[in-house]
Length: 174
Ligand SMILES: [Cu+2]
Image (cartoon, rainbow, N blue to C red; front, side):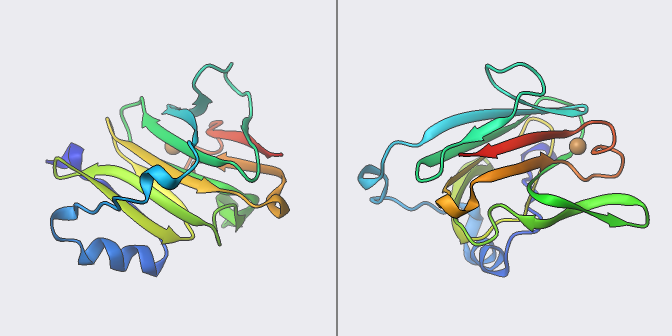
């Protein structure tokens, strides 16, 4: 089913290899769950053309405390495909914004939880650059940021025209 198809673009090679090795896309890491600190859960809504944190005014930054486990749930509220990239230093390609020079989750252990072909999957990867979501999809990303990444970052969608239309949101790592 096309709407169930989960497009993950820009994962590290490791993550892609994991996805390809998993029959039926079902992959879960059991047993580790209860040993972990409960993650701070934030829901981010992606529409045409904005990101909005659940419970916050439009344009209010996404705030993350370093050292705490986070679960960011990305929801597609709109009708078209969007991207989520977390980084800083917008790159320019032929006069168009095209991704970030540095990516917040570049060297971070990340767990991705989503649904594919009607079953849930979970992928653990080192580093994450870009998520791409289609209509009615939900993708959750779990990670803990180290203190050295404290500062101002940004969440952006670089599908042509979207970033320029305002599809970006500040991220503040404390
Ligand atoms: Cu977009």
